[in-house]
Amino acid sequence: MADTILVTGGAGYVGSHVVVELAKAGYAPVVLDNFANSTPAVLPRLQALAGRPIPSVTADVRDAAALRAVFHDHPIAAVVHCAGLKAVGESQERPLAYYDVNVGGAIALAEVMGEAGVATLVFSSSATVYGQPDHLPVPEDAPLRPHSVYGRTKRVVEDFLRDLAKANDNWRIAILRYFNPAGAHSSGMLGEASRGKPANLVPLLCKIAAGELAELAIYGGDWPTADGTGVRDYLHVQDLAEGHVAAMRYLAKAHGAHTLNLGAGRGHSVMEVVAAFEKACGRTIAKAVAPRRPGDVAAYYADPARAAKLLEWRASRDLQVICADAWRWQRNGGRY
Ligand code: NAD
Ligand code: UDP
Image (cartoon, rainbow, N blue to C red; front, side, top):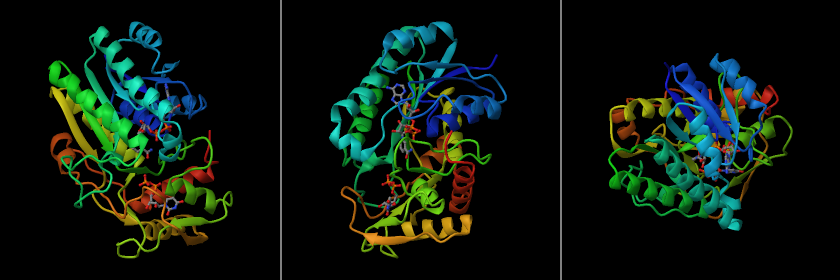
């Protein structure tokens, strides 16, 4: 029988792609989400793409009683924990909400997993835990100096999970530090549909190309990079989702907590992303250089060697595919 995997935040951008890739790999995903930043309208699409029924539970991941019911009702073998709040700017204004959901959610989940005897967990962390890197590419043992409340909640959860695994060797935990997830499912049926105006570069380009937003404000044209604009490691969301499947397979044979970068291992500047997006959509993106965004860094990209070695995973889709798939999703409406 297929292993049943609980995917918290499974209706969200990353979680929805993880659900589909898990199903493709022969697992039986179950979604838990409170739809704080997503909609149940994604669920029929997940079932269509997965080719199997996807049970879903509407619940808050902080609600231990609701979690207990999920573990009672489904033979959960492992968990992928994507549920959380992720807006860097908002986190500065709402630290209580961010610590409560991100840290409180992880604690409630680990507690109920412990009660249920489920010890395999894949956690969505973020490269934002590094802050300003000293060297590029960034390896997992680089210092952790997150700039934002959001980043600090991720660091706290990482520490918590590593402490759990130190205290009890039953745990099998993969802490995945995502670099910049971008793009959409190649079918055009899944993509990023966060509430409100997007803050991330590729979703903004989608809205600008579609005429829903006027122009791109390029946050700084004088960074110490080749063309003066910020450099990031854009990772196709399907590559990222495949990384979760690889982590799940790895945990079947590895105890303890394992911290892994998931990135493509190369950087692209804002100008390069704009050019690739223009090529993908066949339109010109209106843009103007604006002041730097507080908290931004000039450049960072992953050293993905550990994931390549341990998970036998590497990103296979390049920036042009990311832009083409993001644009296909946008042309299909860009929402559920
Ligand atoms: P998302 O907002 O699309 O997905 C998160 C999902 O969690 C949403 O469906 C939301 O409704 C749900 N959720 C929020 N609070 C919840 C709660 N209390 N109980 C149950 N469900 C809740 O975000 P995403 O981009 O898919 O991110 C998924 C995870 O990956 C997050 O933990 C995020 O911090 C992390 N991450 C994302 C990025 C990125 O750029 N997208 C980068 C690094 C890390
Ligand atoms: N960026 C930009 N204008 C925007 C949004 C983003 O110039 O409106 C730049 C940002 O400064 C960074 C890159 O695009 O160099 C990626 O930003 P994003 O917010 O997508 O990801 P981050 O790496 O900041 O999490």
